[in-house]
Length: 88
Image (cartoon, rainbow, N blue to C red):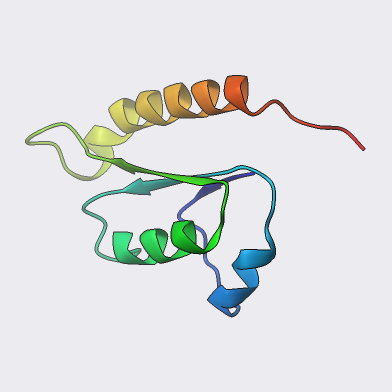
């Protein structure tokens, strides 16, 4: 399970029931989706990994999307190799 800026509205305690590996990708400087929210989610899910993504220095907004996407794609690829999907 890979989450990127999830809009979780339920009780955070419900996340403790998640047993599959979870990759949480968070833009470190996001002021709408605070990284503290991601840390709380990661702490509750035993098999989770939180990755804080920093946009390149001096870049903000849309100009950083390509670079951020490349970092995200690399993180997802690495995560998927270590945690292959299970069918069934």
